[in-house]
Amino acid sequence: MADHMNWEHVVHMCRQLHPEEEEEVAAAGVEAQLDMEVAVAEAEVAEAAERAEGRLAATRAEIANAMAELADARAELAEARAAIAAPPADAVIHDIADDDVPVPMRFECAGDQLVLLASFESLAGDAQRRQAWVAEEEAHSYAMAMARGLMCSDLDSLQRRGPSPVRVE
Image 1: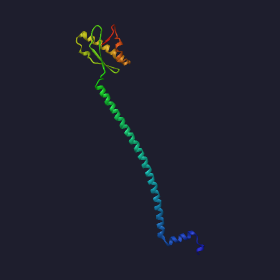
Image 2: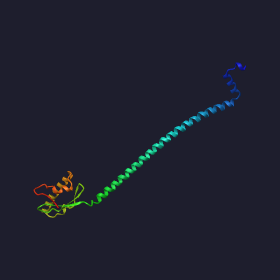
Image 3: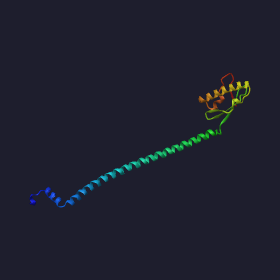
Image 4: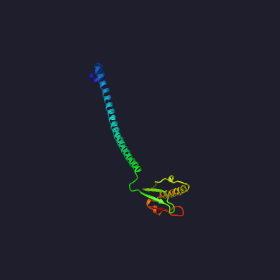
């Protein structure tokens, strides 16, 4: 009888004689499949974690660079504020006077800027107000010359708008 049986028939008979082993084999197959899926999922999670750590390191480096740039900008701002608060020690003060009537104006050269130090409002009387207006026009012409790129060293050669030259002492 064993000669006439095929393999499938033998397997079927074994399954009927030992059904508990069939369940164990099926459970082991399912467990092996689940173990393989877990291993694949763990590998994917590990790979994603590595990528995230790389991005985190790059982001931290960018943040550090931005913080360094911010510190540099704050230092430059502090330097600029200090420079504005205290005029340079080598600033030259020029007294500008008309040939005929002294005009109470004082300018300070700081780099390429002309800074008016005296106030025109301190002049008294109508005649002096007229002089103050003329002086203000002169100051404007100096400021315009400075805006066109003339430096304080060029003040000696500047000419006032009008008949008389301006003298720099």
